[in-house]
Amino acid sequence: MDGISLVPLIEGKMPTRPSPIFFWSFNTGGALRGDSKPYIEPELQEGTTPLVKMMDGKYTRTFRNFHYPEISEQHFGGARTVLGNRYKLVVDAQSAKQKTLELFDLKNDPAEEKNLIDSHRDIARKMERQLRDWQKSVLESLTGADYR
Image 1 (cartoon, rainbow, N blue to C red):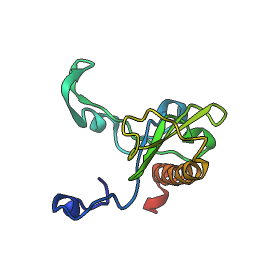
Image 2 (image 1 turned 90 degrees about the vertical axis):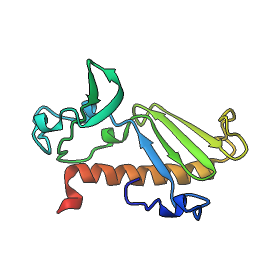
Image 3 (image 1 turned 90 degrees about the horizontal axis):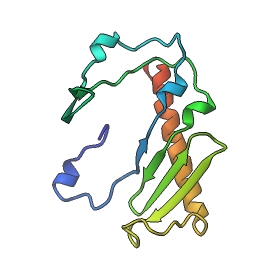
Image 4 (image 1 turned 180 degrees about the horizontal axis):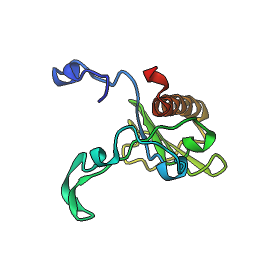
């Protein structure tokens, strides 16, 4: 994982993660404008990720990376998850108005069958803030703000 040494994990000295991990299905189609400029030439972004099985007639996936001139509320949408050591927050949201939250206690409910969102709102709010902060850092990176 980016920025985290896995040596303590490999050596058996890391019983828990030091910080949560985040997942996000970022909707680039909704965020890009017609004049968006790629970070590098599109042909250099072709086939950047090898795949085990063929998709769309090739064994590689192409990811497109573009400069984003500014961040807006629409950029924060999409399905996303924050995974702590004990709890997992799942946010299914295509917009700020249409949002479903699920909170699971992975220690007591590893199959994620019981949604605790109503009984553990404080934990969910904290995890949602962590997720939002992480998303903001990702989006600021797309604007180039952390490279100046």
